[in-house]
Image 1 (cartoon, helix red, strand yellow):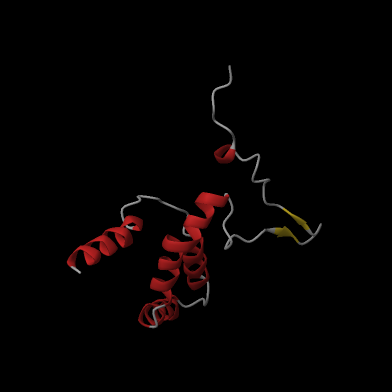
Image 2 (cartoon, one colour):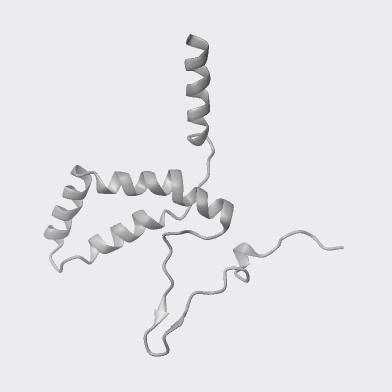
Amino acid sequence: MKKSKTLAAALLSLGLFASCLGPNRLFNQLHSWNESATEDSWANVGIFVVFNVIPLYPLAYAGDIVLFNSIEWWSGSNPVERDKVDTTTNKSTMPDKKTTPDKMDTKKRT
């Protein structure tokens, strides 16, 4: 029984030691919205406190760390990322993911 608990704890902790940093887009979008929710900075602080008590901020951060950053790492796109659309032309202003420098093939060609 002790051996299975140790094995389970070791498997569950693998995600904690992966050292995978990501953009945390869900958390950053929530934080960005909170900064501009009202014109009164005290009201924004109140929203921040309420969102920590509820716990909306911790859940958004945990979702980013466990789920969304992992999806982005493996697939190359984050499901939380929204396309920015130019309202005058109604076209996306997001760069093509395949041609961005961080997604380019970095293998040396001979």
